[in-house]
Image 1 (cartoon, rainbow, N blue to C red):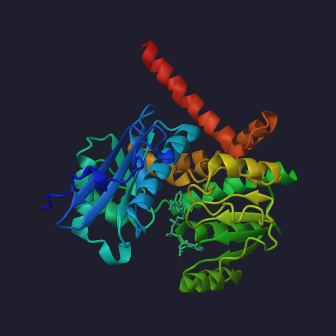
Image 2 (cartoon, helix red, strand yellow):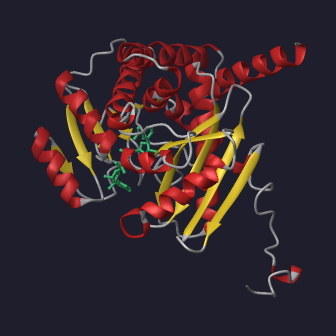
Image 3 (cartoon, rainbow, N blue to C red):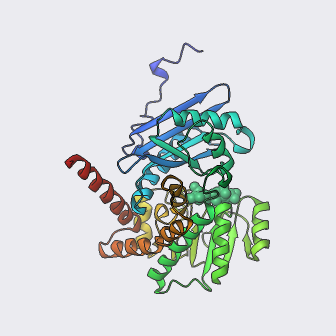
Length: 368
Ligand SMILES: NC(=O)c1ccc[n+]([C@@H]2O[C@H](COP(=O)([O-])OP(=O)(O)OC[C@H]3O[C@@H](n4cnc5c(N)ncnc54)[C@H](O)[C@@H]3O)[C@@H](O)[C@H]2O)c1
């Protein structure tokens, strides 16, 4: 215990939570700390109008608590939008655990996180995200029912990444239909950044379609492995934005479309799995529109993983999961056409549709 933490002069002179731009009307933010296991986690519950806030838990070695909080808030809001636009009866939430999963993740830490989830009585339902796996969700399930994405042997739908990748593929095809008048990706040059779980599965879909694929990853072993497995070109380094490509598929972390990259990008389509691809949504969405680059909104086309875990709550069949994920093609095309008709950036049109659904539900409840 320390006794000098209350000195008001030591507080930072900025509003740390409510004052953050990314706070965007969050309903609740929970800071979780456990000395024994070393757990430091943040749970963000953005909106529960459509249902309980479902969103993954990400374990990452953030450079600071600010970065971790900002990531929580942005991802949590993204989940609200994702559920709403996909037509699921779920709200939006997200958790992050601060630490390197390879070094700091232990069964006790994971279970302790589950106990914090349980303390929220179902307002937040967790799932796997970067740094976590179905086996971790099995541990969380030992202490709370408010978890999805467990292993198939534990009654879960297992690894959601093939479905997530299939949804991204559908969204990419819809963007091609809009940009080129054909959804066929044969001979299109697709540059995939990040060939982890989703990136690799996306590469497989693209190869099967006959696309020309280049991949990059900061993990050199992974890059070499995926390049050899699918016989695709490997690009080493981070300066690929000026490279010739038709489609850029960000499948690593967020904010890769930013002030440094946006004017260099040669692609005519951006469609990938990463969450929060635009560093500054309003600004960068508008620049992409001006530059004639079709941006398939991330939260719309990467919803396959969410559809997959939602099936655990609703007892959907595999067929229904695939049908709903395939429908990402139609929704994406509708959003791109709406954006064009209303002269909006595509991300703005998608946010508009998501909030229309939330507001309609709110009104319905208020009128009851
Ligand atoms: N897994 C899902 O079901 C799912 C669903 C929706 C969205 N997403 C999002 O998609 C993205 C990828 O998810 P995943 O499950 O494949 O994660 P992952 O950790 O398996 O893969 C991410 C890959 O990106 C690489 N990487 C990280 N930074 C990079 C950089 N700067 N340049 C190049 N490569 C980089 C990593 O080395 C890793 O191989 C994440 O943003 C995740 O939030 C995942």
